Image (cartoon, rainbow, N blue to C red):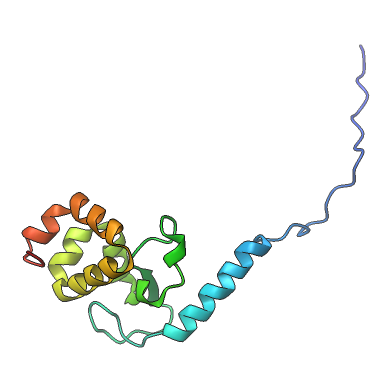
Length: 137
């Protein structure tokens, strides 16, 4: 029976925790976002008006951070919402528009100010939200 010789490592293993959790560039972005969040922190939900404690109140971006990276630190793009309302905005825009028509209209005004192209695309994609709910003509 032929025995294989074990492989020998030519470089030492990295110690546990040797790699940074985030890149230096992402660290800068995170610190900048934290400064903006701290400066714009609200005590009540933008949509429902409920007073919420810190963990329940979350920052909500009108234009997504992934697609609109230049707008992620813009204070006009940021509102504070309680977690249930934030989830509704992210996952069910029709229900959000029906339950909170004033907040939806304000968000649409801000979206149009921030990026008219993104607003036009949002309107095209979600046309029923504007006509069925009477939010806009």
